[in-house]
Image (cartoon, rainbow over all chains, first blue to last red; front, side, top):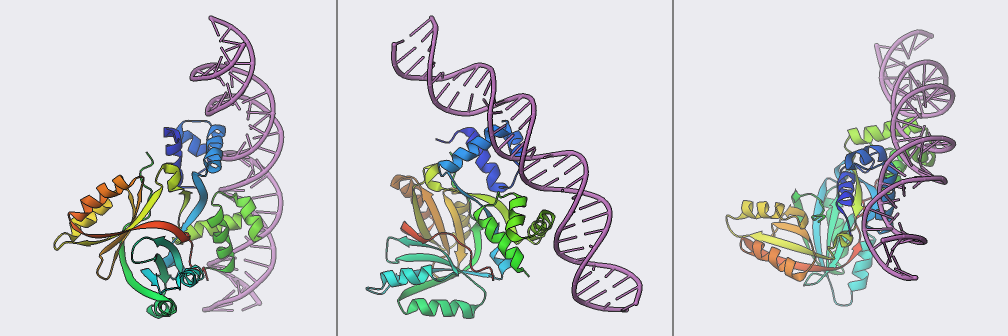
Amino acid sequence: MLDELDRTILEILIDDARISLKELSQKVGLSSPSVSERLRRLEERKVIRSFTVDIDPVALGYSLTAIVRVRPLPGMLHIVEKLIKETPEITECDKVTGDDCFIGKLQFRTMEQLDTILDRLAEKGETNTSIVKSSPVKRRLPPLS
Amino acid sequence: MLDELDRTILEILIDDARISLKELSQKVGLSSPSVSERLRRLEERKVIRSFTVDIDPVALGYSLTAIVRVRPLPGMLHIVEKLIKETPEITECDKVTGDDCFIGKLQFRTMEQLDTILDRLAEKGETNTSIVKSSPVKRRLPPLS
DNA sequence: ATCGTTCGGTCAAGTTCGTCGAGCATGACA
DNA sequence: TGTCATGCTCGACGAACTTGACCGAACGAT
C-alpha cells in the first residue's frame, strides 16, 4: 500500500512541504523524476490530500481556544449544524455518537466574543464549553506503518 | 500586522503550499523577489509555523476516529498526561478547564484497537468516548482579518 | 523456457524558476 | 531640504524541474 520510500517521503514533507525535489530525492536516495512520480501517485491516490501551510492562530489574534459540545434541542439538529458551519470561528467540528451530538473547536480573541458565539448556539441546543489551557499533544499523525 | 497581500499569499498557500514563487507572485501581483521576502518574514514572525502536507488517515488504514475525554483519578494527572503523549494513535490532545481534564482525538483501525487503548487509559482515569460519525466542519482557519 | 508487457527506475536535454545585486519610488523625520 | 529606511522592480546567472528516451526486473501467457 505504502512502501518504505513513500513513508520516508511523507515524513520529510510533513516537516517541510516546500523542500525542493532535488533535496528530497537526495534524502530518500532516488532520482528527482522518480520522487516526482511518487508524489504524483500519492496525490492521485489521495494519500496526500493537499500541501498546505500551518498558520499560528495566535499570530492572527486568536489567542484563545475552546472545545464546545453541543446537544441540539429536539428538532434543531439541522439548524444547529448549519449554524456551526456558518460560524467561521469554529475551525473544526465532528458529529459524534453519544449524548453530545457535535464536538467542535472554537478559536476566539476575547471572552466577550466567546460569549456572543455561545449565546447564539445556546438558543438551539445545550452547550458545554471547556477552555483550552494547553495542548499536551499537538496535531500529529498516527504511525505510518 | 498582516496586510492584504500577506493574507492573499496565505490563502493561496493554504490551498497549495508547493506552488512556485513565480506563479504565486503572478497571482498576488508582485515580483517574485518581493513575494519571497514576504514569505521569509511571515516565517520569521512565526505566522507561518511550517509548510506541511495533509495526509488522509484513511489512506493509512485509520478509518475510525474517536474523541475521548479523560478525567484522571486523584494523583494520576501526570501519569495520564504521559500515557496520552505516549499513545501515538492520539493525534491531538488539549488540557482543558472543567470536569474533564483532557480532550483528545484518537485515530484507530478496529474497535478492538480502540478497546485496548481505552483500557489502558481507564486504569488511570475516567474516560468518556464518542465515535466520530462525520465531520461537518473540516479543519479550517478562522477569518484572517 | 522465452517472449512481451508493465512497472519503476536512471540519465540528459531543454526549459523554467529562484536568488542576488543594483537601482528606484515613497514616506518619515531631523 | 536632505537623509534614511523600506519595499518594490529588473536583469542575469546558477539551480531546479520536466520531459522523453532508454533500461532492467518481475511476471503472465504461450
